[in-house]
Image (tube, rainbow, N blue to C red):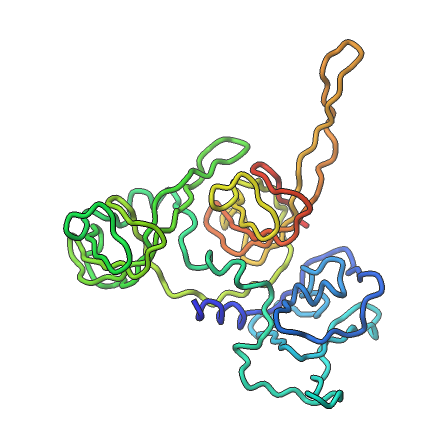
Length: 343
């Protein structure tokens, strides 16, 4: 998991959003901010911007710079520069310890100190674990067929047998169980199934059936549960930017089977790679509203009113037809059926 966090924080880069509206500063913004442990680029930009998710713009980064990590560390001084006529953030010199003077910055442990884009612990559990079982995985996945010593359930350190692993090409596996269906709120069609993560297993001996040992059990594992390969986590750039295409999505569910969510909840959207969604997209959350009334004859009437925008969500994992997003701002509860659009 340390590698996952390192990959996240080292991959913090920025791209310039295709925004038509100018950046708006908060009222009476500070002229500088000294970075402290626990800050994120989102937090820092929020001290200057009314829309902190647009931090790639105020740092004036472009798409060519996506290959170069934008590293900021505790103790750095972030300056607000208005010399060009538009707001820009840039780094000053680090404050010398105990001197009160600005001195050149020296870093001894950059991996541990670098400031991430968003809080990595908020999405850490969802980076490598299976979240969705799409149609093609339902019938072709590896399945547990027998338990150690004919037991009904196994846990950490126990062994089991699974079909569908003829060789040792993959050593590490995720164990999961098919969860609740994710239905499109508009059509009612099942898009995918949520994967209920059970744990991890390591291949001991390939064959039909293959022998595996449970290396980590979050829940008890049973015959019929399924497995998918657990590849090494990819280095992914979590850079907030608005989608270039028009987004008209619906909230499929709140992860974990919850009825409603809020800030820091993970939600599923009914759009994915096939719809142009990508990691880092920021979408605005809306609630449909209808005004109910009773006319003079006693009949109920309804009048549609403009949808109410109440939050923002940050897309961090994308499948073919489903995306998962972290709710980063929310003034009310998120519920299934709410809409997500361009911010």
